[in-house]
Image (cartoon, rainbow, N blue to C red; front, top):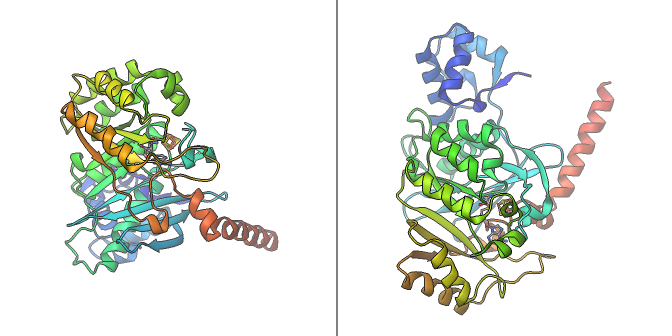
Length: 373
Ligand code: SAH
Ligand code: SF4
């Protein structure tokens, strides 16, 4: 199969071009065509020599994600469902803000961590996404939004990326890092390190590696103030407990582009939302520069869990705020299209019949393969 150029960060592309006998500046030109101008074919790359374009035609491709569905919410949130083969779908969500907007990107089809309150976790793990499939979400969304929002060539639709879609990004590290580098590269998307966030359920030693390889903003999904409860909610905690995780967070701050860690905390009715637990949380993070993002739980069938009432969320937030911790309560966006984190592809499959469409498509493929044989 031809090489997918979306799989490369600039260094990777330069090395690959060198193999074709091309100089580095050619790789830079090519990279800019792909990521800045959103070129979909080599024919468009008019300032590349015809001989190079011919080489690219035979050796490489720009393999886009296969779009299954697009849904736009009344509040401007847009959600895309992509078919990544084998009956798997992933989701990407655009959340508009006053100026530009945030893209919520998936890193895996499914997730192996299996958090109690997460719909992706309940679906189990299918496979890691490739770098091209991670970057491909931004590549697609940026182009699509520029069309939808009628932006001029130099304007960007997305200035913020959060790795908060499906999957645990630090369990797909090898594909993640070149994707992050492409997002940050001035010849790529030129995003600020402070505006690219990796969210993790707590892979402590991988947090250290990220600090070394590609420090970006870090969000850590905490969800409990003690190990006994966290063991139940986030099974990864049995391997990497809170002590280990918080020590990794402290070390990360030395390299991080921001001078705080964001802790995410999904509030579950009667499980982790009491005042006593809020106080325990304050003690737990004492001395660690951090902010809290409280996420109202998005219920799904069979979870056996409920969303904390708004008054409880407010009271919980107050305890943290009174202790001097900046705390925000995440607004739910795109509720009408189920665009909330943790509710991704499975929910859409249920709602839109995408699962059936995927199954039908596979049947067509199988029928096609049979016919060709
Ligand atoms: N695997 C990574 C990133 C993806 S999940 C992580 O766990 O951090 C992104 C965020 O959505 C996490 O904070 C996760 O805890 C939260 N989340 C998952 N399921 C949720 C649900 N049903 N309701 C609210 N938030 C949820
Ligand atoms: Fe995986 Fe994150 Fe969901 Fe946990 S919350 S199962 S780590 S995607």
